Every structure is written in C-alpha cells, then in structure tokens.
Image (cartoon, rainbow, N blue to C red):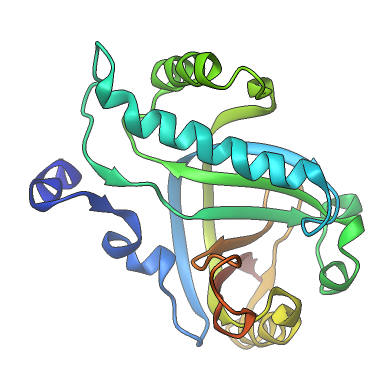
Length: 221
C-alpha cells in the first residue's frame, strides 16, 4: 500500500525508496535483507567473455520489461503500479558453493545467477503472461532458462565498492575484517551466496567510477 501511494507522484524507484538495500556507504553495515521476488537465470563461465552470461542478462532484462509493460495488456495485473526497473544483480560462487577473491582473477571458474528484482504484483500468473507476450515478440529467446524465485537472504553485511570489478578483493577484505570485528562469521553456502548489485553501466561508465554493492551472508560466531 505504501508503494501505491508513493507512485502517485511518479514512478516508484526501488533504489531511492530502499536506500538501506541499494545505497550503502564505503563503510560496512549489517542489514537484515527481507524476502524479495526475482527473475533469475543461472550459468557458468567468465562474464566478460562467455555468450551465456550476455544472453542471461539480456533475458532477465527482457522479461523484466515485459512485466513492466503488462499495464498495456487487456487485463492489467492486480495492484499494478508505475515503477523503474530495478538494477541488475548477481550471485556468484565456485565449485563446492564457496567464494573467495581468487575467482575474481580466474573468472572462468565462476558459477553465477543473473537476476533482477520484481515488484510485489509480479506473481507467477503475471510472470507467465509476460513470458507469453515476450515469446511472441522475440521467439528466438530461450525463456525456459529463466524462473521467478522468492529469495530471503536474511542477516548480511554489505558495502559499496567504487571502482573496477577486478579491484573488488580489497573491498571484500574490508568487509571480512568488519565481520570478524563484529563477532560474526561469513556464511556463504549452497543457499547463501556472494551477492553483487550493479548501480553503474560498464558500457557507459569508466571502471574507476563504477558502483557495486557487495553483500555477504553472516551468522554469529
């Protein structure tokens, strides 16, 4: 209901309304991440070179905009509101479901989930209708690769990384030091991943100015 009221003044912007999730500072902070709905596509390989990653990003964006444009169809989704499509996000891990800084240098070993958050009205029925509409416009897309998933990350620590993706290890070191000092430990596992949220477009922004939220799951020691 809060979101519907806010959209009266314009399109709802998830980044602005949920600054605790999308706009942390360069100093780590602890956050309890609520359940959210995402469109996800899984894959493996170097995101800079493999076609699978490029296709995955294109697919999650295409489906996200198909849901956004569902207002134009004969039956508008219940509780629809105007919004800005949220930023691209990614979960990253290696063999054995763990993650360390070495994967940033050896990206061919990476497994990933490319994903974009969806508004609350994007229930399974709305998602399926969006897939049908998109399939008619772009039959070349393999829509079977995507899925609609609820994700509740729970207790995490996050930080804003400014700079090249290759320079993330230094920021992760700051994050890990904070985790230990606060009496927690990293809880990266099968169900809880290294998480990145991309606030800059590498096609339009120089590497030194790229902004990326880095989020790690934690538990008490």
